[in-house]
Image 1 (cartoon, one colour):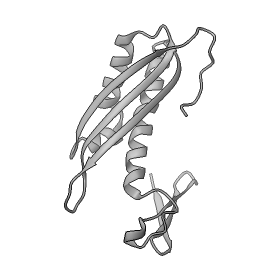
Image 2 (image 1 turned 180 degrees about the vertical axis):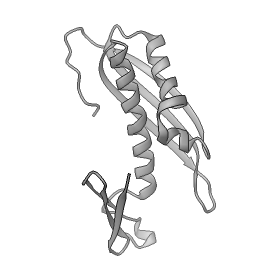
Image 3 (image 1 turned 90 degrees about the vertical axis):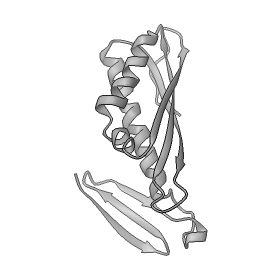
Image 4 (image 1 turned 45 degrees about the vertical axis):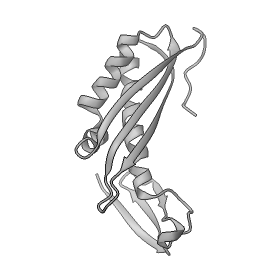
Length: 148
């Protein structure tokens, strides 16, 4: 895996990933940025949530659960002094589907947290990770949709 990050101006940067995608980053105004894009630490948090949600959806699909939506909200706390690493991250999953088995949802989240999600497992080296979830029942004919 590779990535190239280029400084644009002020405190704005653009990253080009090894898969050819572009991603903008910027700093807060008090740090010389113009608030045009997410902060790098926000992207770490977003990537961690995306990694875990990906796992949960894949695991539930493989378990033949009728999942229609998955959303994970992350709330992070950071150290007050440099390096301002994440010290606590709460993951709250809202998983929607028809007759989802609570044990299957719990197991999917546990597998992501303990075995598959590289990002959250790395974050767990400095942060306390807390996982909880809500299951939302949907009708049998509701199509799967992206979280939003």
